[in-house]
Image (cartoon, rainbow, N blue to C red; front, side, top):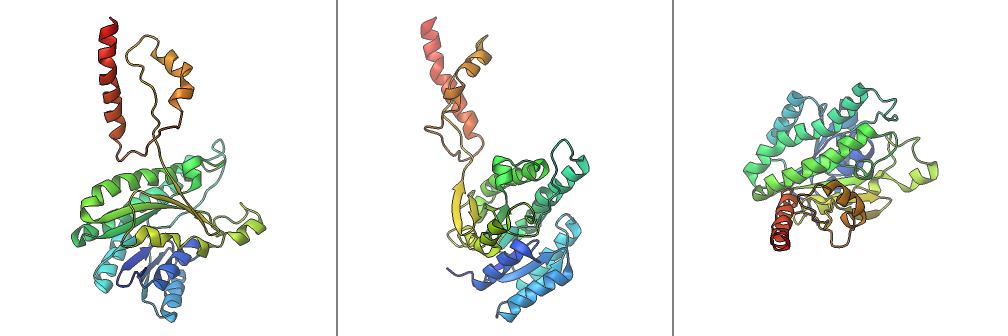
Length: 297
């Protein structure tokens, strides 16, 4: 599988996981736009790519700065004429238990991860629509999908990115834009002190990046959540159980509480194709029960 001729922008790629992403995509033939807060860091990675025979430019910008991101995209289009792949990788941590976390730290993490990704997506969206081709990757996390102590801000932002992915994938489908999420586990500056030295040694960032090829290639899926770390790859899903139908009743709440094991039973659960699937199924269940209720009267 080759990405020859494709142009990929990787945010936060001056080091760590973003650098590994940029180097990997370049090795597959993509022309790379290295973005980072630090111009020297971005320059160094772009130089690595060029030294290996690839094409790359470096552009320093905060993903939270709409004007700079717009300039970044404009420079990319000027230099390469198109933008095919956006990997939203830039992020920060401000870990504390929720009781000790300031709202400033909550807002900052949400601003960088969620709003920053939205700004970057918005900046490339029209170019991707016009060329009828685009591949966008959100960087989510197991902390968002499943929770993690001390990461209320980070987890909230990371799960919100899954919601952004779901809707952009639906809106971008007719324009050939596919949107997916990557949930990485990697030894970077963000994870130092969180995991043991032995675990960090097995979680090299370059063992995550190959998962990108499935998410940004010609035959990429859309609305997929790929979990990757230590060379292991798995898919996560947001599902909906069969549930139960209670209907209008004075003791509806009591019935739901009493039948919680049935409500939560995962046998027969589905991955909805879109959000309105829930409402459609609820209305169908109510309509199916209505004749039964009328007969009972």
